[in-house]
Image 1 (cartoon, rainbow, N blue to C red):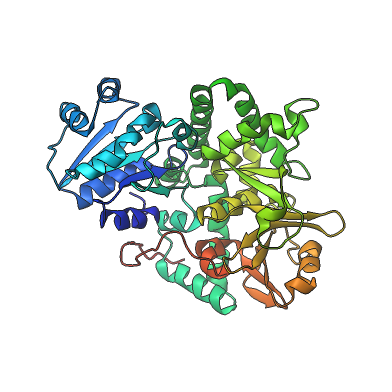
Image 2: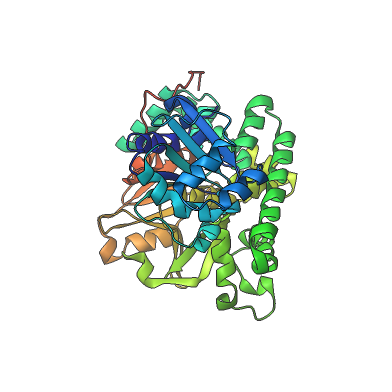
Length: 457
């Protein structure tokens, strides 16, 4: 059982579960169902789960319900546990198979006999087909693959070590060398293993990267199957984009070249296909901005972008095994900047940040721009190589009059250090990225909830 930050949000919903139904969204196989069922087992007297992908009979019966009373009557035939009023969580899983059941959420909540939770894969696209989305009666929580801190918890990295990292980043002082070197290795491992719970479990159990890659390969195949099943008429184009993603990231510019989809391809033709992948939680789109000022959306160019994969481990698994080996062993000759950028795109998305980067032909490129919620813009550079202090584009940006007094960040193999307007943070500062950048974390973690053992890290 892995501890997940999103569980705190589920516990918050539990306090007022009579006001709204719970909807957990996100990509497939990231642990949504596990967390909802954990909530049901730990905080309700009874849990009733209906999986519409596995139980076609229940799907057919419930799809014909005329009202909440009729639905509950039909539900009782399939409930393995007792439906106890006021003490039961009814969990409808894989609702992409029956998205219209969400239209009843308002009336089920108003009925008040039970608490209700919904989840499933590909909901970002399928929910657009719902006839009447019950606004105000559903609390939506979006989940992502395990972030680096959750990966550390799964591997029993000590809470003292992670606390030291957070304190050092906050006070801009170096992390002790023995922690620094160890966590750099953990981060490289995370780049390779990623945050899909199945892959993390295999790694924790076996430490066998070949078995991890087999698991990741299976996940990639499942994603391709989902595209075929749920994308409908768009499936060929969506699949073509998914197959091009690792190739385009590995290119020198890292920007997605539309002509890779066909000669003369234009964004207007494919924008719904990109939207499908992003909405389904499969990909992360990072748009370029022409002016690095808030609001960044004002100057974004949606047709010029980078497309990252939602999980770093799945991305690495789509390259030859030598890539994983060289990242893990920190090969000096290798240059895998696109993989490290993908990790931080994933971390920023999990913090709820919209993804933007800055590109100027004269000044160069800054990897990420993040809005801090106070009208400011935080520039970030991600460095995978051995010369992380070479960042001309970032330095040029910080020299602008409107950036005077602001701070830019470089995430690299270097220890914590501040040099003028630039703060250097180690890659593993991803474990406290929100605090390090002065952002609000999406989930409020209760330190007493997480039971982390204390090995010598």
